Image 1 (cartoon, one colour):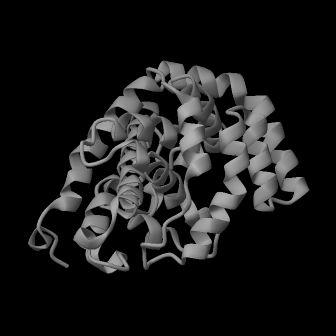
Image 2 (tube, one colour):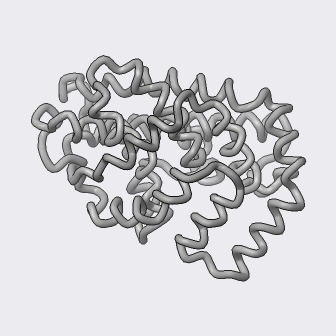
Amino acid sequence: MASLVTHLVIGERVLTRLPQFDVTDYGPFLLGCLLADVNNFADIDRRRTHFAGKLDEDGVAAFTMMCTGFLRRRDGLLLHPWNELDGTGQAFVSGYLCHLAADEEWKRLGWNLLLTLGIKSVADLPVPGGVIMTAFSVLSSERFVNFPAIATALSDASVPDVMTHVPHEAFQTMWDIVREPVMNGHTPEHFFELLRRQGIPSADLQAIQERHTTYWDEAVALIRDMGGVEPFIQTAVEHSLEVIPRLWADRSLHPE
């Protein structure tokens, strides 16, 4: 999965190109972009929230089936029919789908990296995957157009109760945990603060911090060797803009 900060960078660009929404929908849309990762903050299986598993488990399905699974189950995922949701509800659901589209591209990026390096599993990466993701997040934060506007929109937003596959309180719990670290900075230390708030044991957190110290420069170099963060962000934006309008398509286009 891409980091929460990376999802915000993508969401910032996507919403400006969706004529269905205006500035009042900014906060709910961005919340959807973030809170799709609720499985990491509650006892909820990733397949329930992302509709596909991991590269090691699903292969190419990990970057082809997330959005398809979501769209096929659209009506069953909603408390009310799509066309009856207000702008806030549609914005949140669209942000959720934006997250899935970005994650598909993230999985595709990982798949291509494995092929380039000639390895079979993310466990064989020369740099720990968690360090790569944090470094990608920090580098992504440099691509914000107007983060103060994002922070304002999120400060004013509340989590809408529109979905059935995840309890509303689970979304709210995740937001309570990630709000401060995500809105107040984009450094490894803010990521570590998020983990502390998530309840990661001190010993585990110390080991994570040590890995980041050891491999940080290598992770940044690897990302730059891959072409940096911008090509991924652009691809994720375009994929999001391809799939999100399908939410307005006739239900017959999304058979079970």
